[in-house]
Length: 97
Length: 208
Image 1 (tube, each protein chain N blue to C red):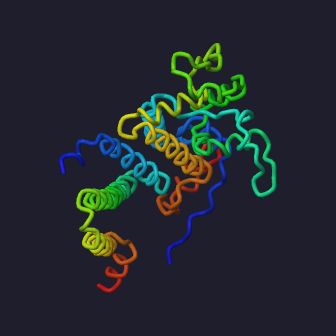
Image 2 (tube, rainbow over the protein chains, first blue to last red):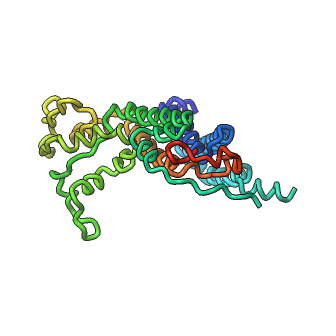
Image 3 (cartoon, helix red, strand yellow):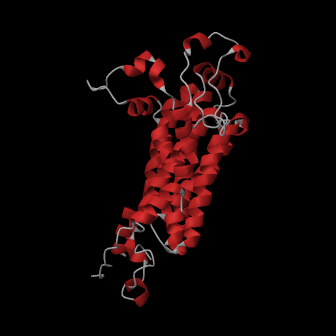
């Protein structure tokens, strides 16, 4: 696990996540509260997706025989992640209540 | 049903200014903080990417010497500039950073073409490189193939490769910023529709 964090390329990603989420959100709204709220949401979504993907690829590269487990975990993780963050499902839930 | 806000007037001047300098169009529209956010974020990302790439990842080469680039695409022989952009596709994204990439365009038009095939087996100190520009030096000048091979082979942790990705993302994000200056934010329910403030046109004739 140590080598994953020792690789310096990973430390360059936060600036990308911050800039992309802030600029993208600012092009969608003019109000700062909405810009910041959407930017934080995008930041977590991107960090979660990229982090999950990075972790699965790291595990595959260090434990190649575990690939079926890694694929199942990634699939289940993606479904749970989508269910938790999807605006469509959130809206549906809100309408139902 | 919610009333829809009136359509905004397209602001061509602000869009052009935002192309030149990210956020400048928003500043002249009175959205100063947003303009500054765009400027800091995009210039920060662009020059961070250039730094990662050792300041050698924003350039447009003249491909006159490269035989394989002269091949027609779908039967059409591209004009020289399009041919060169098709060889260095990254520049199509970087171009949208405006003034920041103009040195690359100046270098493209002023740098002489040299035969690079002879340089590939030379040691770095013996290679013949194009003459530096009198003002820009080698800033954004297309590196010779042998130097690029060295950078890719000897770079640490692929950071050199990551650098151009950042510059391209910055350029592509600026297209969104240009559109924001041109037609306002995508979600238009932000403004207080029905209030006097929303009804008044801005000084530049664009978005409030």
